[in-house]
Amino acid sequence: MTRVAVIGAGSIGYHHARIFSGLEGVELAGVVDIDPQRARQVASEYNCEAYVDYMDVIDSVDAVSIAAPTTLHFQIGMDILKHGRNLLIEKPLTTTVEEADVLIREAEKRNLILQVGHLERFNPGVSMLSRMVDKPDFIECRRLSPFLGRGADVDVTLDLMIHDIDIILGLVKSGINDIRATGAKLLTENIDIARAWIEFENGCIAEATASRIENEKTRRLRIFQRGAFMELDYQKQEITCRPGLNSGAADEIKRPAAKEPLREELVSFIECVRSGTRPAVSGHEGREALRIALEISGLVNEALRIYN
Image (cartoon, rainbow, N blue to C red):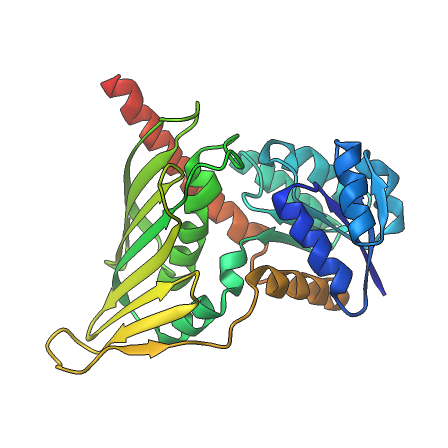
């Protein structure tokens, strides 16, 4: 039996607790939140103990998932690793690359699992698409959301765009030549809308847009490569394929077996904890996505300083 605790009982942590509580061979030992009423509410629903201080549950579990605000990831993560516990941290890994490096070194020194919660890696549409992509020439991403307040403690690049950055890096597998970006702060003190243009050494170009000020939620990824066009709707887990612009062939719709990406991610985490194998999204992949997201934020902020 693998005993797990969830730190952070908000909208994301709630679903961590829900899924862990139903996994075979897993015991949800506790839910931690600084709001004791919220901790008790979620713990009661999923039949585990409620805690306000995560230090009170560390010694009684094998692994921990952190779904607390990003600004707390580093301190909590270090405490968990120093107590010898395997760790899943929701994206982004930390707020700085330097903090990410420290967490990675600590996990490797202690031979512990450090997985980053980039759940789109576990979307069955992404899994199918990755097997279809050969040498992409152009990638276009749209990740748009209404303003919900959640995640507003960081730039939209770290809240939303980082998902697509991770997917793009996994598909292109090439060094980066240049990054350009623009954006705006509209509802918060952080960047609320951003657009980035990434040029890779192998010639591929990726363009990503992320916004948390839209009327509707959109999650789309379009890939152009020689002789083919593919579009993934993340929400429908559906891929539209066009063999070629002049082929005359009809579009083909591919639908992999529907799965809940978060459940797949948490199952994978538990398997890594039990086997000691490297996660699909280890600290290193999480760090690289963070590095690019922070660079894009820096470019946007620099542009805002110049024009304002």
